[in-house]
Image 1: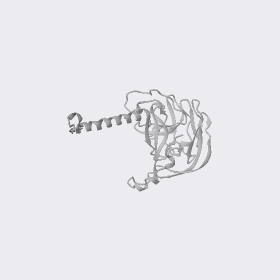
Image 2: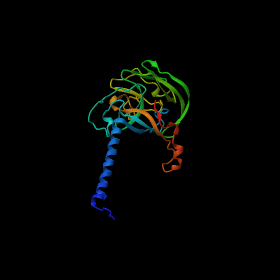
Image 3: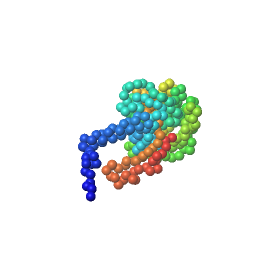
Image 4: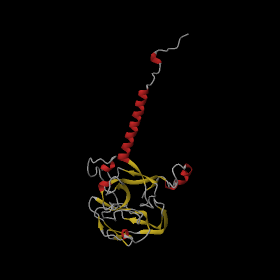
Length: 267
């Protein structure tokens, strides 16, 4: 009877602790690199903290933003290093796009608004109505609308489907806005002419949005936004939660998820 071969050549070589740690580190570095590439060049996620884009975006929406749509500026990179100016492979946004960009007064802060005016456009709000290049922008099917902002304050007003003229041959962009009043400085503005290299942004919640209608030196005045400040185009709501209860009350989680908003496209 032959005896089993216990020669070293047939035995499994034990893996040392150092090899195991090295393999874990290699895997971790690979994952980090993939995440950095995706976040820098493809998609980045953001959460909506305020009600300035109601009804299009709700407080607690988590959105995907495409980084490649308008090319890349230094704000596309992690920590926004001042390595270059302008945009690489830049493409002009379209009127009606919902975009994420850096705040003009503090570029460490991300804003999300809708592009209403492009270079050369005349933008004005008169008695609560938007005028673009001298033409009143229609807002169809007005109806009552109630929402809550980030302070849980009820917003009771009228929503309608605004018809923003497309740009670069694109069709009309139809999207809902919320109107609470026709009074206030946000509803009676000068005729603004958008300069080259900039865009004019507005929130869909027209009476609760610090946007390009405010051109002063105040800490919340946005003014015209440089194209360089663009981060990307808001494409889709992938998750949404009301967060009405503390995080540790897990039994409320299913009820707080807005199931009807998951994977909803943004228009």
